Length: 267
Image 1 (cartoon, rainbow, N blue to C red):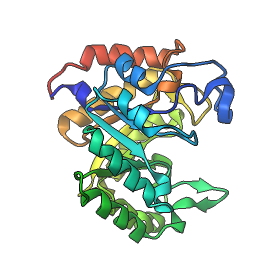
Image 2 (cartoon, helix red, strand yellow):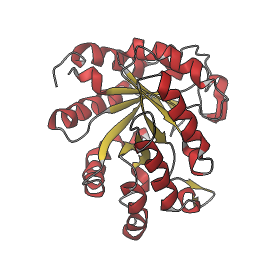
Image 3 (cartoon, rainbow, N blue to C red):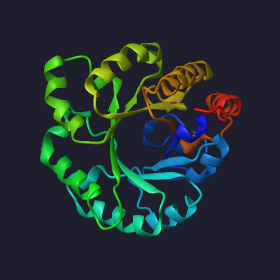
């Protein structure tokens, strides 16, 4: 297997963050789709995350036909189990649909930790349906930010059952300024995921600080994550996102060059 086969895109509808949408600081206009970004970045897997946009799932799945793996975001499935039914139904026709992902499952909004409104049993029921259905077993992933663990032991212990209820966790560093703390956070992350699959995320745009990511931070992360892949401590890296990929931003140029140098390494 090639190194690039371990990389995923975190895909959004084209132009989702154009013209400073959601106040994330991108004042430019991008037109790149998730599939185009996979081709541009040289990778073969994607998570599709509509982020509030009403999308036609089947049309996107058709565009993803040549990819190895496709996963759909399904946070609302905790309230609406029928979302999982729709993804399973799509999986009948699209053999590369392999998983779902819970984005921002643990987050703080107005001082409230969002996950507390969902009992663990909802996640367990979702996983049961994903694992045992009339199509095939699908996996579940959950997003977890570095600033939301390793701070309060009691809170971490309270959240542990949610982490144990999914198949895998994707660790993300929200604020680029903290990127050099990632190895320390990853060691804590390993303690919380002894029997859970792991991936890590790499922002190619600095959403946390509402500005472009730096080539230095992106290269540092990709080099570090490559070592984790080679050691077998993670099974994938997720690149975020297509919606700035065609804007001549430095971080994307660095990522493309990095993949050209390392993507065809055997792993």
